[in-house]
Length: 114
Length: 114
Image 1 (cartoon, chains in turn blue, green):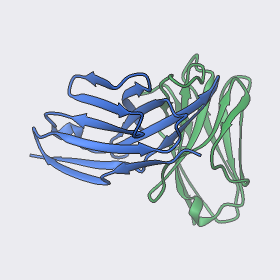
Image 2 (cartoon, rainbow over the protein chains, first blue to last red):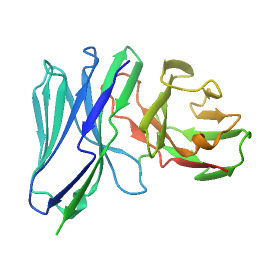
Image 3 (tube, chains in turn purple, green):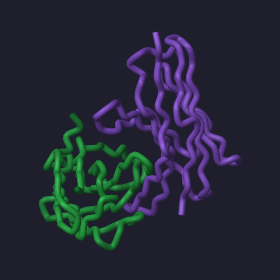
Image 4 (spheres, rainbow over the protein chains, first blue to last red):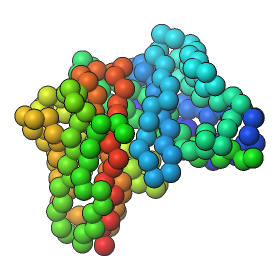
């Protein structure tokens, strides 16, 4: 089955700096890669996603890049703010019709310090 | 608020017991997913239902079972509980279960097995 590895497990940056989280996946059939943010004690929420036919996607301060050949994808957060502090999960999806399965990475705890 | 509801919020029980977790998807969503989140294993996909039928299965233990009812709510049954089953259990829903649909997570049920 699919295996997703995520690095680093913790990341501390100063406010205003950039943060980068990297993930690799194993199943070449995976073709959808969402990123979820989970604040302390709360539910995971989708922040950005990318399909396999796209190399890069940007939404304001966050961007995701995908390298299908190398089977890795990354989340980039620019101009970090204290409210960006949370755990971020990457995921890879395999699907067939109405059957879909998300395999998550182990998470990156991002701390933005003042 | 994602529109996905889960009950109960907290559950404390003893080893060997059986519990039922309940999930109501967002209005109009046909697909329900169950995840287990523990400290050492991150978010693990358990099972997906679409319009009452099982669609995809992850690493769900044989002691665990689930179903989706005609009104689309879902229940996850955990039996012969072990200490290691202590975790946060999330339900998520999506409109039609296909790959590119965002999954909306509920607030979770925290299960503690003593």
